[in-house]
Length: 172
Image 1 (tube, one colour):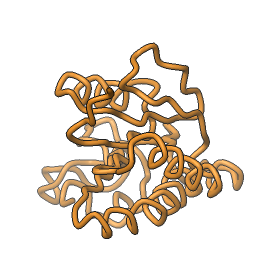
Image 2: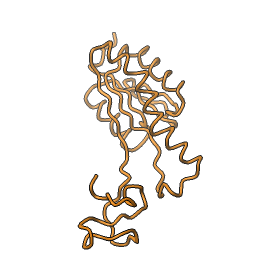
Image 3: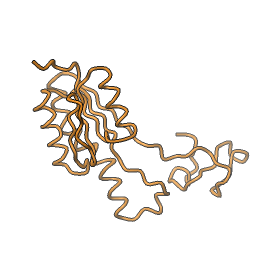
């Protein structure tokens, strides 16, 4: 007989980096894990249900939640860790890059939360964790944008992100 795990989290962006580390940590604590990413490989760990899927696709989010519930009967935590980061100023994004970033980083969170939340509400408990990236870099004296610390009491911005251009860097 399969012992029911104490908690069942879904971890998005689980194939590498922070996501893979979160999956490993949950497993060390004895939790079953539903792990997903576009490049998710089949896990040899019977406590990990691997599901390949693209968070930008609403039907993938619906399938993820349905399969998780069919296998484990509950979802206790959703870790929204999947996303796209482009290592360049937003002013250099193409229209296609912008659409991909918004679809993955915003719509992907929304689609999965919309499918998970009703089940958590019926259970009377649940957690949703959003993991995002910082877009403001630490102060850098090599910047050519605006006055630096001596002039305004704040760091210079390395990249022309909107809040740097508007003079709020270091205040977020």
